[in-house]
Image (cartoon, rainbow, N blue to C red; front, side, top):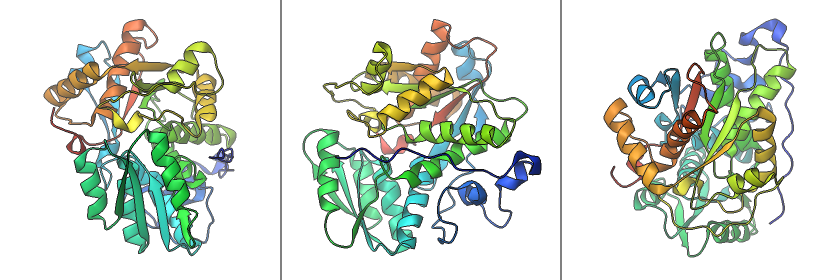
Length: 358
């Protein structure tokens, strides 16, 4: 597959007009940031109420891990249960606005559910390619939105290849969360919301589970554009949490490589980050380094323990992919990368109901 086009910075309204210049008071959710979007101004938005997810403290879990100033942004309260709704809303809006009537996507589950839901909202046909190992709950969710689910044997890359081939059919568009630039415009609102909500006490670190890296790139893009426009928003250190069973970005980061390294992916409970060849891996690595961030590899046993602990201590049930980010934050604190007084924000990207029980 060809590499995606490099992401381009969007010119935001000047900071002299204040934070309200980034918001349209007549819209809600991610679309209130329409003035900050790098998407065509004339396209009608497709929305299910995504965005404006809560930021909550984790006092009991944080105390157990030496993190007294730790927050979680609950992306799992999004309409389909994951942060992918932000990017799906913008991608489907752009494609529907261009007259597309049918889309294909490849996904381990969450992105497929998001694209299927927003395609249904827009009245588009959707065909979603998933790994045979994708959890039944995620496959059922995708099918429930009326999409055709195509299970593919082999690696996550085999799934992407099958989807790309299907997108060559007439009148079909590839709604790729890994490649379509509008997806990162949607996830950029994750960073815009954090910067605006925590302007007086900003996070020094943001820890995210990373497969293709769309949410990390969205956060990076948001802070870069805010700084260019003169807003008071310092770029936090962005830390990428990966499953030890499939960690091409962490392997590259450790060796100082500019591109993801080839890895032999193994099965993992954290299927959302099991991406052996992230399409925007070069950009993700550059963003991590530019922010002063790092990468962490988490094994499945640790992800299981972390998920169970968070549910018990805070009443939050996250999917294993999200638990990887919590475990990474604990690891970074233990290693001294995160100091005890640092404000830390963790992306709680997906709901636990999509995975097997704790």
